[in-house]
Amino acid sequence: MMRGLLLALLWAVASGAAAQIHVRSGLIVPAEVAPGAEDEAAIELFNAGTEAVQMRVYLQDLAFDRGRPSYGEPGTAPRSNAGWLSMPATVLTVLPGQTALVPYTTRVPDEPGLVGSYWSVALIEEVLPEAPSATDDGQRQVRIRRRSRLGVQLITHVGPGELGFEVRDEAVVTGAEGDVLTFTLANTGEMALGPEVLAEVYGPDGALAETVAGGRPILYPGSSITVRLPLTAPRAGHTALVIIDPGADDVFGKEIALDGLPSGG
Picture 1 (cartoon, one colour):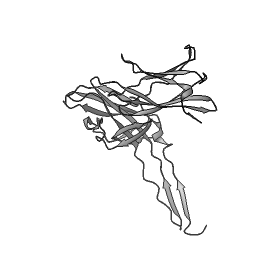
Picture 2 (tube, helix red, strand yellow):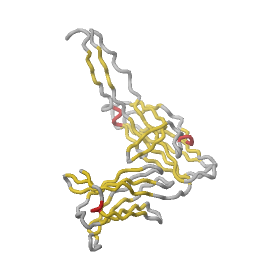
Picture 3 (cartoon, rainbow, N blue to C red):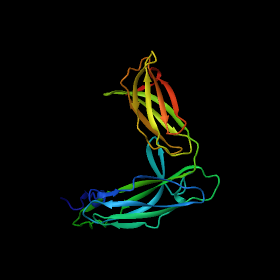
Picture 4 (cartoon, one colour):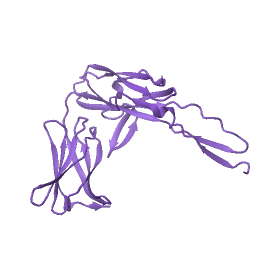
């Protein structure tokens, strides 16, 4: 080849040792801590591979909009608990077949106005080795390395808060597998919860035609997700009762006339 030809070499690293790191303590860690109190816990990492892996741990604020996560500087979100968390370990090495702990302490300020759920995310990121030096010989080499990263959501519940959910933007999407009822589910309350989501579909005579389960998605206050529920019953003359059950005394619901919804494909 001619000298000066630009040659791009992709060097992917994430398929190696870091892919063998597992979080044994769970990816969502809730704790109930009263104002003025503290709680000690640890993130447990296990290396199932054959190589030692160096990981860096740091906090970020976390938000969701229709299920899409976004990250921000710790302590800037309205319900961030990042300022309450003390996590001395920032870089650690996890040996093959061994477990490593990332201890942290949650100290909730003694403020009477604190209520409901507060949260952040601990990002656990591989510390990559130096890339091999590029060759010369008139050629330029560009190496792109893919970094492995895990996220552990740390939730602090400070006493009971108000519950509230909103169902909006309802539509029916028709595809190869039939009709799918879609809607946005927003948490308008103060508690992070995993409510049971389902729809009961009733025919023109009021008889139950089918029940469709939508799982138990985790919803933070102020966040939202898009729910998709496949339907087998016909739309004409049918009504769906969407039920949001957070497992408390209050159950939230909305009645939707299916044949009056906008359609998409």
